Length: 112
Length: 114
Image (tube, rainbow over all chains, first blue to last red; front, side):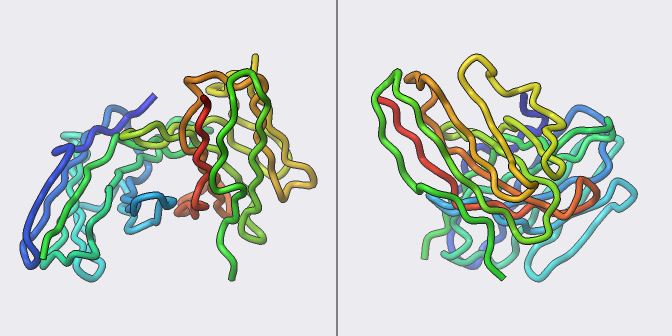
């Protein structure tokens, strides 16, 4: 089963523009993580935000978390063609003994 | 350090045939995961190991899927017999433990059942 739902499913932008992806989830979490997947490759961890954090930055990435709305957003600023990939949110549920649950992902296309 | 290594990268088999995937996690990572990713979807957990013990296999179709992690290091995932619906990418990941750790994924094995 997939807990997270990303929105939009697909996003096309020009280089230099910002890209925002949203994630909604269903159950209480310990933390939420974002991963990137280039075509034909495995997933790469981007950033982790704990349930008691509201915002986190890493380079051109900005993640927000609203536990009251059970939602998160990933902002990529000044997008580059190399950012073209699929982006997944993954939740670490508070329920003991669970592995990360991934959403369906947002496919980002950045054209030069 | 070497990442998570999976082999083969691609596999094409006829339905009803057996197939096996192999994963070598990052050295020292106690927790190992097998995920299946269908086209256009996110990864879905099949099984999780803590060292050599399978601690979560509730999503593993046990009638045809089996997995093992001997000595708590390498792991194999087997399907026998394969069905057309098993076509997917099989991803292996590892982490230091089940705590607040990011996962490191391998490149996956793309299985096509014809």
